[in-house]
Length: 226
Image (cartoon, rainbow, N blue to C red):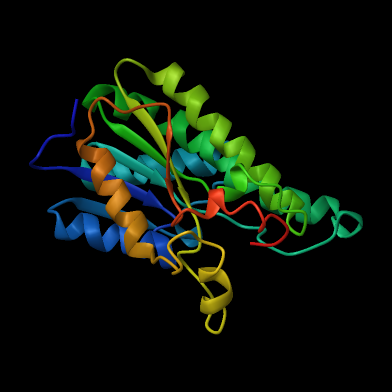
């Protein structure tokens, strides 16, 4: 079922970054009460940190209809030989481990409200980015968690992923990144926010990933670097 149209409450983990801020702004414009959490608000690298963040959201908001995980770390280019244990752990911790433990902590709330968990993945979940091996592996793990968690929380709650393409592009990289897409242009964090809002109303959608990439996945000639 779609989420309720009034008195809606959301936790956005990673809500202070470029994409997260756009999601928070759009939800608030739609009438949501939102807790925008950054790294200083909860350490998603640990089970206890994720639990504390959900407890804070519960205390401030009263309940949770929507949880968005768009926190991440470890997006660092490196060759296969250059990947260290530290860089591997940095990529995996918040992205994959944090996704799981945030979902674990929020599950009772989302079941109670018949709510929605949205996991912001990446097209790197589906492409072999050899310059970002740890990031690609972490995002692939995250995409699998979308499906695992959807089965685990059904039928009470829904779980969906969003896989953005080039939507938070560094200045000066727009032309190169636009050429990687079928539409010939880069996207924006607001495109991801639009997808989140769509999923809140798509009550028969769960266990799948909505790709928001301008057709980048179909441009098979651009697999080496994002």
